[in-house]
Image 1 (cartoon, rainbow, N blue to C red):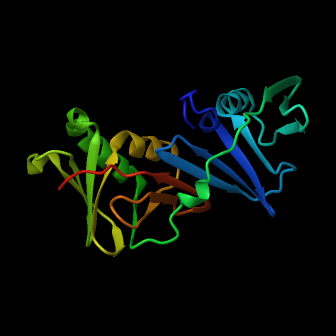
Image 2 (spheres, rainbow, N blue to C red; image 1 turned 60 degrees about the horizontal axis):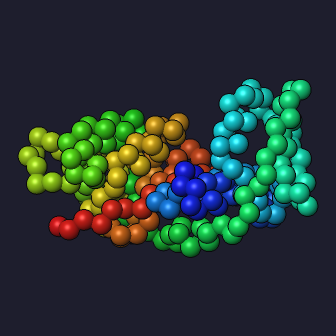
Image 3 (cartoon, rainbow, N blue to C red; image 1 turned 30 degrees about the vertical axis):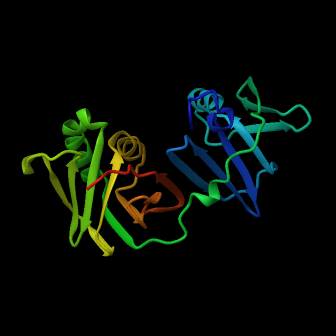
Length: 221
């Protein structure tokens, strides 16, 4: 979620009830995370402050949390042991996030998460003076990582991967990649790409309910 208070709705987490599923969505305008929770919450669509949810998760150790929703007052209350935590919901219209999620891809990549993270961190050291931009050249057999600069070959790295589809060269802010890879627990990551300027989808191979989108950075060849 965003920390920019000039766009309040983006500082919240959007909960949207769809049939027997609740979609939980967060975005900061450059990244988006979506999780399909297989349960029907008695809420159609609400935006909850992300800072409040972080506090709730910080103080609870339970796998299940009780809550109530006062629709007229726009107040959400969580019950944790003997404590009650309440927050006002963020009012406003959440961006149409469905439009950001690509419906197709021309290139699919499956690779090891830990090695992916190591390679991004390694190349990001040389990319610090160039807006932290790292280039990914995806081709037959794997991915070549390099900083956004005419650099020496020793500043690059290569990772073997399962690649299907067209070769593609794409650039990302290394901090966004590291944020995602540091948080996910899946051993394998799947990347779905359409074009160098299109939103890129990152998935956990062992969890089909979650996806993460990172907007690429446009760079000149």
